[in-house]
Image (cartoon, rainbow, N blue to C red):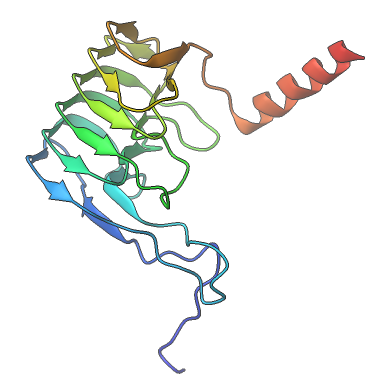
Length: 198
């Protein structure tokens, strides 16, 4: 054993500004800069460099938690949890760095890779984002709101509403209300679309 590991594309050093766990946490008023690492072969960035993140591991559900007034260059993410009940995301200014990964600037998902989980009582309000928009996802879903957010940049950004949220009074966004689908459902939907083109 050398104690060394040569990084490749799937490697990650969990390079994050703040990582949250458990219930009823508050992350308020932080300024952060975080950047992706580069692979040993120098060909592309590694899958890391997140900003504020609550990821699906042990204690992966979110309950009555708060992300407010944070400013940073990497995404704010509640990532593929086993359920959300109570989350306030308000007054954040998230401006995605060009080298960041392809995730939305605000990413709130209660769906793991293959299964939906409940997404309830989420408020994503009065945030400013640049880069890749906002995603909210979960099922069953109720009492979710995406309101008063502003997209900063020349191109319209997307609000992907996969959690039956009330989406109103947002500036500079296109809204996509397509419900969440598992990878298998997406594959079948693509096949149906291709058959209809023939």
